[in-house]
Structures are given as structure tokens and as C-alpha cells.
Image (cartoon, rainbow, N blue to C red; front, side, top):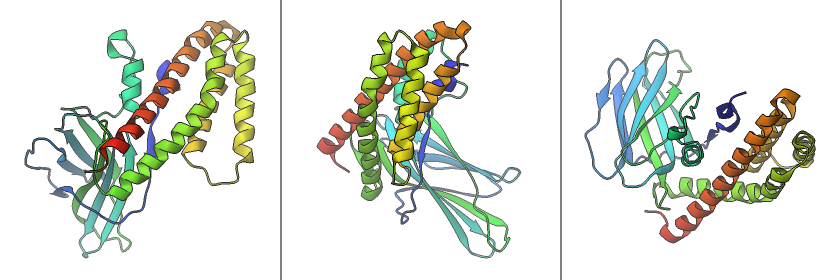
Length: 274
């Protein structure tokens, strides 16, 4: 079992929101079009549509001086009969700041898939299947709209309600992460990691069963930790040394996540939305 399979994490939170467009890139379905360069902004650099796979590829470029931690994207598909389909996703990519810090490239660590990142000067690709027509009409054009962006300095741009939802999610995630972090930290001095990981997994499973509310980001935190505990428990006796390697990294990732979320929320309160 590779370390990257343990720590690779992607959080995609779906919201149905009113369309608020602040940066737009559009392209006819049979071509590729670049938008004009604009300094000092997160922007849609290019939108591509592949009719063979029906996939839309949106190239995002960060020309600001700070890293992007989350963004909202709407892809609008227009059909030959004049109807449209809209797909909106809010993508939290703040975890990439953690993974690349804990597992730096210079240490020789390789991810199966590099964490999505948007540091200053970087590009990332947002990919999604094109919308489908209810009447079976063909696609005539695709347009991508960047509705909101949140940055590492605590500022945000675009739809304030969308930014507020992301911040609320981060706040709940931080609360649950802090709740379970002492349990993980205690495992650093465990004399029987396999047994302790089994006990923590059972405790997390019981907590999940007792929850009356719909699954949310707190549930994601619990399930992620449980997944790690189950993986550690399944390691054979011949892989016991691997547990001693995995636990410190898991603790480091979890601690770093809590620090980042606390910093983001503190900066957001100071910086506010722009």
C-alpha cells in the first residue's frame, strides 16, 4: 500500500446556486479559444470540449500573488434547440497546500495524481462531463463561468454567499478535526498500533452510526480517519514497521490541516470578501 493512496484527499462540495458570473470563458464545441490575458486575477485561460468523450476541460490560471484555496465554477452547455444545462461545483483545493508541504517533491515522494494546486503563476484543469439535452439535441456551445474564488490571504471574490458556505464548511471541518486529533496524537506512543487503530476505528464507526443528521463535512472527517485506521489494521505482521511510518505522517497531515483551516478562517474574518 503506497503512502499516496493513504493521504491523497480530494474534497468536492456541490451547491445549487444562482448563477453569478465574474470571469467568463466560452468556446464553440468544435474549437478551442483562449481568453485575453489579465494580470492580477484568477481567470479562465481556455475552455476545451472533446466531442469524442463529451468532456469539458477548463484551464484556470492564477495571476494573483497568493494561492487559491477554493473556487466555484459553473459550466453552461447550450444545445441546438436553444435550451441550456448548467452544472455548478464548488471545489476546495486547500488540501494541496498541506500535501505538498508534508510530502515535498525533493523528498522523492510521488503522488499517483498530483494534488490540484493554484499557487501564484500556476494552472490547473477543471474537468467535467458536458451537460445533456433532455430532448436529445446536439451541443452547440460550451461556456464556463468562475463564480467565486477564495485565497490563502483570507480574501474572496465573487459570490459572497458561496464563500460563506465554504468558510462554514471549513469551520465544521476544523471543529471535528480538533475533536479527533488527540486520539491520533496518542497513537504516536502506542505500544500496539494495530489494536489501538482497531479501537479508534470502532469508536468512529459507532459515532457515525449514532449520528441523526445527514452526512456532512464532519462525517467526511470521521470516515477519512476511519479509512486510515482500517488500512493500518489490515497491514500484516511483516509490515508492522510501516505502521510506525504511517502514523507520524497521518498525525502531521491532520495537524497541518487544522492549522491551515484555523489560519484561513482567522484571515477571512480579518480580510473579508472583496
